[in-house]
Image (cartoon, rainbow, N blue to C red; front, side):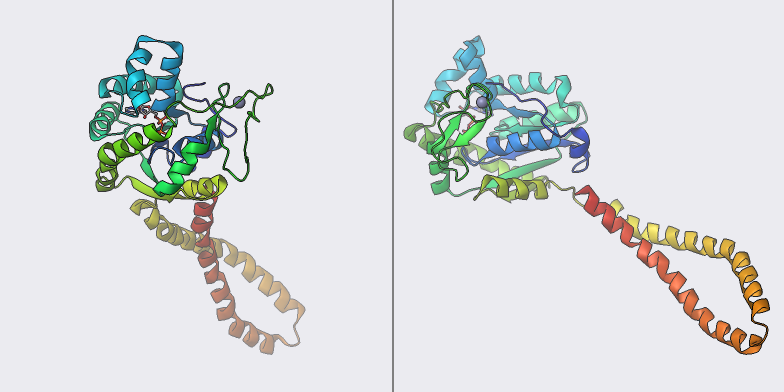
Length: 321
Ligand code: ADP
Ligand code: ZN
């Protein structure tokens, strides 16, 4: 199974329309759908998913020294020691493909890990952009974990209870359609322990990140596609103060531009007026009165133009969404 998946359909520029980069953490209980949604974000924004769970499982599968150390804790539903997971993350964040951002899934899982991550990122001057909390109730979590299946070849997560893939047994993404597998720690007893560990050690991160102004929440119940839509919506960039001020500036600039245009247009308009006046010699005096009367109206129309232009920043914001 790939430890951290590469870029998907869309490329970094798509992510850049959301946040200036996409250095985000997905926070939530086991089975809240972080992994599934991370795969969707990879496909959509082209930034890699970094899942400590996947990296650890890969180490276990390869039988590395680190894998052997991690295995017992994982099988018991406990956390793997901080020095191991922090070491894994430090190495992973040093790779080239994270330059445009990344989706951290399953890390940090306690305050010590959060602090280590913060100092690692501070060192390179690249702080997190957002932490997204997945809200799901425990009954739904138990159901999801019981139904979770993974492709041993491509790593795609499926669920036998999902309306789109009821009772699925084989991967629909791989040509060879390998048999899906169930994670060894997805059994009832281990799940109960994992949920307890989440409550005790990971839940405090909610307040930790809320206090830093990084926390965003998403309702993670319901259909996978609906959750993805909500997730993408909460990742839309916040409106920074500087940007909110911009439309006003643009309005002034637009007014100036319009008045400059009027100045340039004026001699031409006067010439046109003269021509038409010469043509309609007969009714000259009445017409000129009428034209004077209508002049303020035309002016008013022209002055509305900048107001229409001021709609442009709004349109730009929408385009960025
Ligand atoms: P889930 O979120 O469904 O529990 P993960 O794949 O994220 O699944 O994690 C599986 C297991 O890997 C965890 O129960 C834990 O033993 C270990 N693990 C993953 N990430 C961390 C981490 N950041 N710190 C410590 N242990 C971790
Ligand atoms: Zn597959």
